[in-house]
Length: 104
Image 1 (cartoon, rainbow, N blue to C red):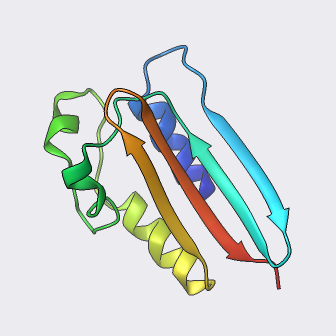
Image 2 (spheres, rainbow, N blue to C red; image 1 turned 45 degrees about the vertical axis):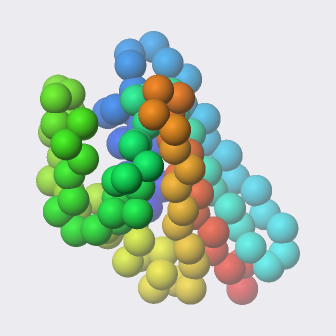
């Protein structure tokens, strides 16, 4: 799950930018976050980023190739472990994806 988020951050961020990866634990939850400096995701598409085969029209102009399966799989896997996955994004400033999973 986290590997997919890292792969996406690398895929959609300009070369040479920093990808921030963090893990924090606070009973009863572990939180992984992956942040990038990519193009960001327009607000009107954010609610659909976890939908199967979803593609954001603005992203289609980039050289990155996407099947539209990765984030949908991440959501299914996270929810199968009683967790949540969220997105914070602002066009032109990048995105942060957070995975929260119970520790027990």
